[in-house]
Picture 1 (cartoon, one colour):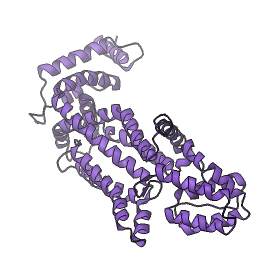
Picture 2 (spheres, rainbow, N blue to C red):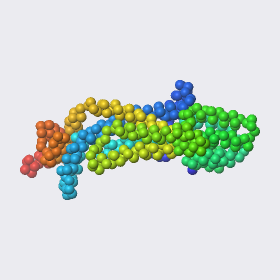
Picture 3 (spheres, rainbow, N blue to C red):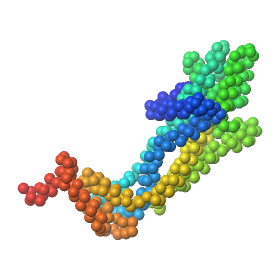
Picture 4 (cartoon, rainbow, N blue to C red):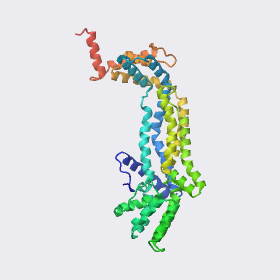
Amino acid sequence: MYYLTAYNGQILGPIARLLGAIMNAIYEFLTGTCGITNGSIALSIVIFTLFIYICLFPLTYRQQKFSVLTRKMQPEMKAIQKKYKGKKDQASMQAMQEETQALYDKYGTNPTGSCVQMAIQMPILFALYRVFYNVPAYLNGVKDIFTPLVKDIQQVDGYEKIMTSIYENANIRALQVDFSEDAAKNAGYIVDVLYKLSEDGWNYVVESFSKAVDSGSQIFTDIDQVRSTLSQINYIGPINISDTPWNMVTTNFDNHAYGAMVIALLIPLLSYGSQVLNLRLMPQSGGGDDQMAQQMRTMNMMMPLMSLFFTFVTPAGLGIYWIAGALVRTVQQFFLNKHFDKIDLDEIIEKNKEKAVQKAEKRGIRRSQITSAATISTKSFSEKAKVDSGDADVIEKANAIRENARPGTMGAKANLVKRFNESGGK
């Protein structure tokens, strides 16, 4: 059963707590140091988004560099694929694999490079869902808003039944509570329910407790205080960032509040549009009609559609993060594109050739295989490559590295075999 505590999953739990602590520090700085209350949670999300993407920028730069180099590498990759097309024997398949790996080394890329950033961002996104869904569990200042009211409610006889009725009336389908638990868990359930309430839900709270306590009770003063504070920190106009756009759309439609309904619709629509814009600016690693390029085109079409769906059914705060993140990435992408247009990719490739020789030597790849991969040119795709002066330098460096190999390495063992063969087996 779920109740208001920080998420305790073994993987996402620690990530959510770390992200929650960062966001809590931002929120306290805004409300305490800067004295900002109106829209402070939404503003915290935007600042938090900027912080996350600044931290991820080195990874973003590396991924973009990978995409640019991979795109430049495609003609040479196709030449290798054409060379071994239809060859299924073990020797040909092994040779193709070795030449392909040498080509990746030459350009300083790898087949899984584009997945690294997604592998890091996805846990962050899922952990953020936990934070945005349970904001009072991570932001101490928000949780403290409810403390006096929770104490008042738990002093009312039969408050469990009243809160159950409030929960059922609010129809918060994504939330499961059970007010038959102990006082500590019930306190969490109370905050859980109250934080999700719309204005109509709060009216029902007042109506429900009016039947159980006197009209002059402190509980009504505290209800007004919580409602007033939440309307400042938790709302952007009619948008409650703890509620889902889908629920806001259906509720506003039933209440004939069509203006608020349209504003709620803007969150998923802006999320979709910002994702599309970001992908349009992003350089694609693949090209043509090969399988990898088709997969990339499918992914680029599906990702904005996924954001459109998820931002409908998740708290609006997550949608704000997604929109802000896409806009930050778009700005980053604009300047990265200008940067990569100016840099000398050939110089980067030449440096990577030297590293490729070292990697090949460590793997024990024959010099002929290194030569084959290093001499492929984007201007010439002959199936039988020739060694040019630049490749001769690469081979010479490979020989020097092998001759000076450290004892115990594969290169050193190769030298022993070479000397044994040259001595005629003596």
